[in-house]
Length: 195
Image (cartoon, rainbow, N blue to C red; front, side, top):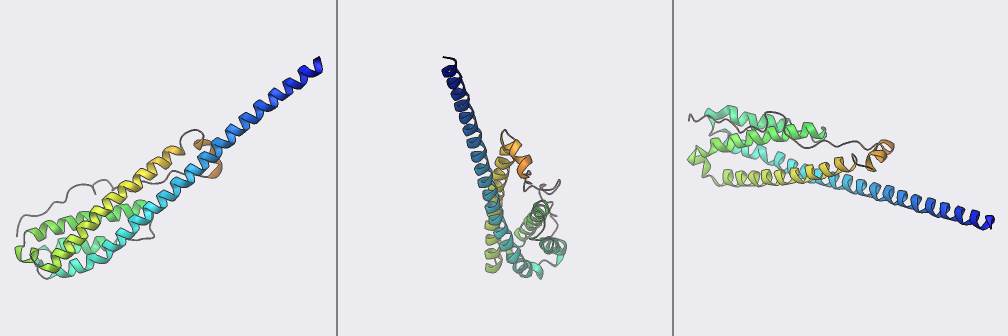
């Protein structure tokens, strides 16, 4: 009778160990897969931002050229757009790209505000087309930044919670940087009303 009791106790312990091991393996596998999926979505979201940044980067010289001659009194605004465009580095870390992007957005908004004060310039077809295209790209960038930041938030949260926090240390998962403006870059542009 003691042999049967011993055998059933070992079987119960082995079964409990097997169930516990299966639950832990399931948690590790699902957490790993979730984090890999989130990292891939972050990379995809960043690629989408990068495409829009490059499109804007390519169109800004045409806008600057279209308005440069007619905005002689507003040379600083035009030069600010050109300078901000020159600050874009596609290989820079995400925080640096975010700061350059936001600074460019501020400069472009200032330029658009100035263009509004010049009816002859505002009515030129090429300026209208460029302005419309860049405004579309600015809206696209804003939407893509929001998606990117949402994915980064989900990823950072996932690797900070149990069991992700334990796996993060083992697998080297680090929090990702948000795409955010530097302090002061989010301020609305100040545009001179003198013409």
